[in-house]
Length: 323
Image (cartoon, rainbow, N blue to C red; front, side, top):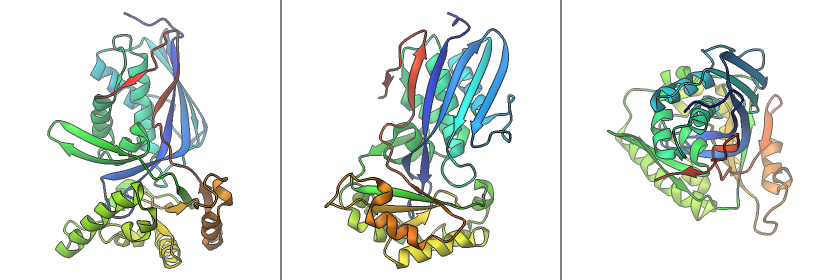
């Protein structure tokens, strides 16, 4: 079956923050900051239009990461549209540790899967395996795909992940600097070997992190402590580590967001006022008072839905299934 020209889908993908302190390469959190992408079948050719973040900077040909992910998914599904239009409305900061590349990969694969005429629903397990192969590790793609907080790992058959229900009082705040940092450079600063006691320290904190995220947020400051990867990358982002130190000294659960240089702070909304505007909560105001000039403060929420097909035309099969 061939889709008619004009068949389209709209996909929404959230920003993410990986590691969350001690859980290096295995934990992540979905955030309420989104890229919105429209995919349409054309009679021939390729059109790529980007607005928002990256407009005028990102490629508009086959090298665009969303297009590359779309093509990889088409190869997996054994289907190729005659032509393709991609319209991206980007709001996720790029090169700042908020999962912009993971979002692009998930969006491309989701778009291909949703448009493919030979499948009835999106298989999240298969998508997770493919996007992890494309991205290289599952810590960002898992929360982008599933929403909430996730723990992810790899097996011989591919990547796996489980979703955690985050305690509703947790409010994530991302502090975004002007500078960018590539994941490749950040990873290149990590030592090949770590001390046994440091590994044991992080293993204990990772276990506590799961409990703090889901049941006892007052433990987040202790649970987000790390010895394996943040301090080791200080040379590439000294202002980031300095801000993390300042915030933690003041009692805030601050960590490097992903590979940096953004900072994630896991604040709480407070039991006395359970659902105010995030920016107006006392903890967020306390964080804002400690942020130096040049940083953008983004008070967010935990995204609970992950990647979504917002609409699909002319067919209506936006349901998603998972094993």
